Image (cartoon, rainbow, N blue to C red; front, side):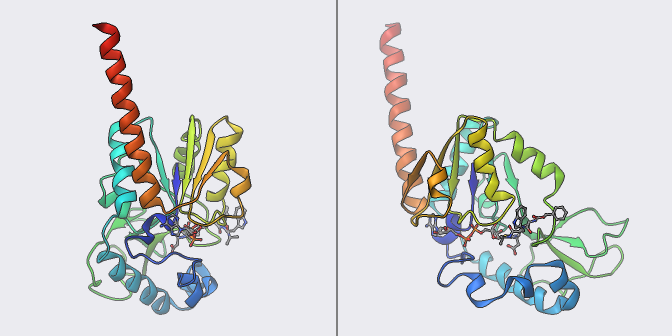
Amino acid sequence: MITGAGVSAASGVPTFRGEDGLWSSFRVEDLATPEAFARDPDLVWKWYAWRRELVSACKPNRAHEVLAAWSRRRAPRFTLITQNVDGLHERAGTRNLVRFHGSLWELQCWKGCAKSPPRWREETVPLRELPPRCPHCRGLARPGVVWFGEPIDPAVLEASLAALDCDVFLVVGTSGLVYPAAGLADEARLRGAFTVEINPEPTEAGDRFDLSIQGPAEEVLDRLDARLADSEESSSGSRFNSSQ
Ligand code: BV8
């Protein structure tokens, strides 16, 4: 399955393309591209520092909790790919999580100096210095996210593609506009998965899914979880009767 910003909406994290979405007040080109960072690292870091502060006050909601419980019960046959960089799936205790676009809570050396690891965790809020520095070369550090025009980490792409060989592929809380993430559901369907979209709004990809469930993720996943628990209980009950 894959999640997008809609899964975190109930936690108070703004989505990207909703009415009060991030892209309604900021331009992608000014903030979420390597060119923007090269042009004005201070501006880009002010935006990411603001997002980190905002998200640090948010908590996982029922959608994150249900998915974390499913991941614990069903890993490794359950893989959650997320486009979100807010860290709420991790905070909910999700296992077998693939972070397709990186994390607000990781930094990397802007120059990619030989001494620094590809990414490192940095969770202090507010950041001790802005913009933060690479601890190894003292050059600029950048947010550990994938910007527009940047490739997906090959290991992340490989783990995501492996997860597409599944019976059911859920697509939860995403407008399905950003590639290559948006293409994963199509690939899952080509491989024989039953694809299900969960979103309160119809999306442009809606007609490509086997099933579209219109509703907020935190409610739909909660109800799905209850139905699954009931069916598991009744089927384990029938197994018990048959062996009596
Ligand atoms: C790349 C991290 C190539 C940063 C983000 C075709 C193929 C490949 C690429 C492209 C292509 N066409 C165009 C491209 C380029 C581009 C792209 O896709 N552009 C789009 C805009 C057309 N893609 C890229 O640049 C990607 N890289 O292609 O590299 C390459 C290869 C080799 C060498 C060099 C280059 C990289 C894209 C990554 C961008 N980074 N985020 C950061 O966050 O700061 S994208 C950002 O938007 C998010 O991470 C997220 O992934 C993405 C999509 O947003 P959504 O999550 O869907 O959020 P949105 O607001 O749009 O929608 C929310 C949904 O939730 C709505 O539908 C709403 O109805 C719903 N909702 C609301 N409330 C609820 C709800 N749902 C459920 N419950 C609720 N309560």
